[in-house]
Length: 267
Image 1 (spheres, rainbow, N blue to C red):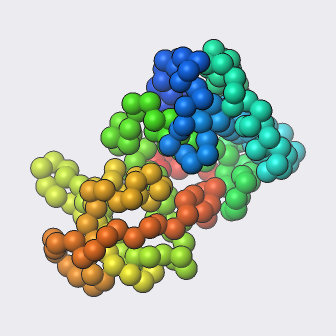
Image 2 (tube, rainbow, N blue to C red):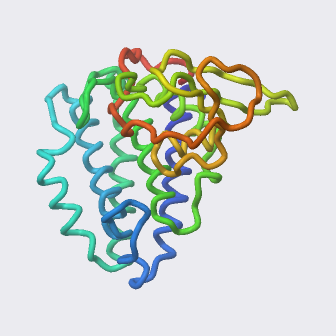
Image 3 (cartoon, helix red, strand yellow):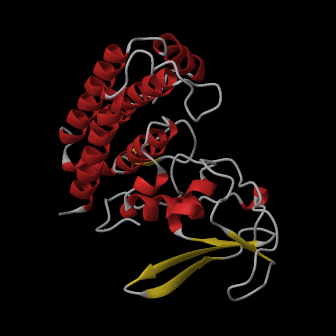
């Protein structure tokens, strides 16, 4: 199975999980607050549907070579979300099912060479079309948690966590960084392994497992389960203070310098 097949399989499973949650909502559930400030679940479900349609625009750009913006403009994006937020649970589910199916069909219809076409999202830099799969997975997994309906960061698949944490580190805005290093700590085959991301800026060192770090990096927690150590420290030390607030996420649509041709593995 090549990278495109793997990502599409991941996305199909992620979408099914998301649709299962959406299908469980009653009309009374939809207007309840989501975990995103100012947005109800209805806002979030509508956003997920419109995001799918916006990514269809990017696949069309890749397929035809005709520049097709992801969204016409920020104002129309916000207006569509607001207009759809108050719909019934049945309408929300149907919209999400149909838009997700349109995007899956668009992916299946892309010829091999189109996956290497360069497109651009709402933030720089431009990126090859194959990375649109990664971006949609980011939307479905993170916003599924944001619905606040039983799906949590602990349910994130390992492949998703590893990829998203990698991309967050590659895109880390050093000029806004409150930390100097991030240490990823995980147990593999009964051995404790560390991956260290250095030279991120100035400040303390933050250490923890991949799930806790990704929750913090994405602003979904305030750093529960993480340790803070003084800059330049080594070893397993007691916490040196509260976990600082991370810089805004995501700062970019994609990491810079991605290979145009889908690689064998990513990251």
